[in-house]
Length: 210
Image (cartoon, rainbow, N blue to C red):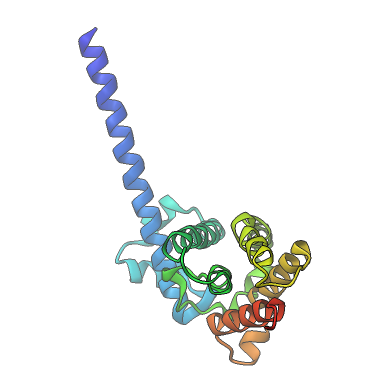
């Protein structure tokens, strides 16, 4: 009986180690894919990724069966990192003015993707429509914290009363256009700069002028 219990515990610990190790490999591949995207955008090849990682394509394919599944993982990693960044900002900047906090929340970019070339992401729309749908889905979710800050600003009299749904839809539509249209590439615009410009326009536009 004791041997059975001991074996069960060992298998459970082994399973936990394997899960952690597998997650670490997945994260390593995703972050390398973002790194390659800094120069090549979404057109990077698995050969590019393998070279960046210093591992074989065969090894990568044991984790992500194709480029589409890797893109799915990258989308979720990106938006999960945005959410984590929002939570961290909320704790670190609790004493800052509400309009500053609101701008920072809207403009969060994960550290691993700050330098990523988003200007050619529109190429994903036609080649990987399911990935495009995933981007849309993630854009439309996770707004609770952001909208609570908008409510707080309105209650403090810092922001004019505005329709929260209209504000959310306006922001979502603009980001979707940035990510899936070709305007940034055509005009040689940087996504992070454009994002900050959008945030300034929207937040300053609802501030109460004293």
